Image (tube, rainbow, N blue to C red; front, side):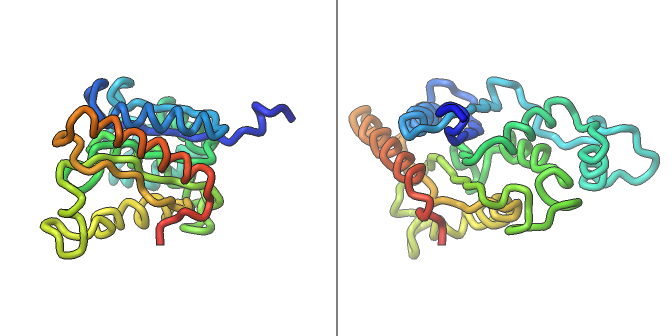
Length: 226
């Protein structure tokens, strides 16, 4: 096996509509940090690709009567009739050792386009359900995932007793309900708080911190959410 073949793969799924945003700069910084750590890096830029986020009956074979999305996902996964874009992204997901979701936190959650990517690509019968179970028995068990995101508010607002409350409270539905649900071991998130309020010098320093934090998580498999 060649060194290239042996290298782990990271899939970064990025969701920001502005290519010159700090969020995008943070993503490209993470790409380089992972490459420096020996990863092959695959990037999905959802806005640039014009990803369609809505899970809809039109992407499946015609259904008479009641439409149940997950049942149709399972059928399509089994008979090989998944939407071609979904199948391509699912293949990239299954190939990756590390998944990084890159986004600005909007309304204390994922942007709709990224949530829609999860709706369509975390296929029942493909990553959980069918021949797979949940959590440790799901298809992505043994792989790792992490969040890379920005906020509008300062870090003080997301602490216990802060104006908004603990960040962990906002991330639970993503960490547990999406990533751990399909088998991932979730790494601590990399967060830049309030970059819009920073000076250029502070943003440059923040990107240095992102680079160091991503490198640390890439190298330290035990740096996980508790």
